Image (cartoon, rainbow, N blue to C red):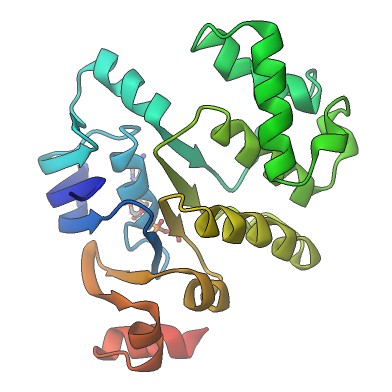
Length: 241
Ligand SMILES: Nc1ncnc2c1ncn2[C@@H]1O[C@H](COP(=O)(O)OP(=O)(O)OP(=O)(O)O)[C@@H](O)[C@H]1O
């Protein structure tokens, strides 16, 4: 059974149809890179899966839950699917540990001591347990993004959606974040990543989805998609990089 099913999804902003019948199945533990030109609909697809955007047609299932417009169900969905963005958006007035503890305490009603244990655990997974009491401002961009990953992990998601999570980082900080993602992939986390890091996509992702003008234009195992692209559009895209 796929963990995420996207079936003939359409999404429009005014006259601009951004998703034109997108279908995609994600198996548990699968690591998928979504690539494509700016404006091809990659971020919108992730946002629809997470329920941050409503859809105009088609269906999206996450686990056994329908992504509909029902606010209660949407909130439940966002508890189950983590999302990490280009911007880390940590609270500057809270320590690293407190940033990670916040959602488990506020959203799930977890006891402070349990939330602290959980926060130490997920900060260890991203290699930052020693930064528990530090302020976000004192961390590098790469470390802040790793805290944002820990914060998402603290909600014990069934899948993680990553939207260009290294795009705001200086080049020398990209690898430390990708190393964390590589570790999550090795641990069996289901990952859907919009990325411009083609080498990473090739090395770490099981499958690549190439979006073009709001459609899945080409998809397949990473080695095949990069090694032997079938469509002129994908060949041109890869050549452009
Ligand atoms: N909230 C919105 N309101 C209106 N138009 C939007 C909105 N969000 C996205 N769009 C439009 O939808 C199209 C697809 O945007 P989207 O961000 O999904 O593309 P993308 O492939 O992720 O691009 P990028 O790589 O630049 O992030 C663009 O034309 C964009 O302007």
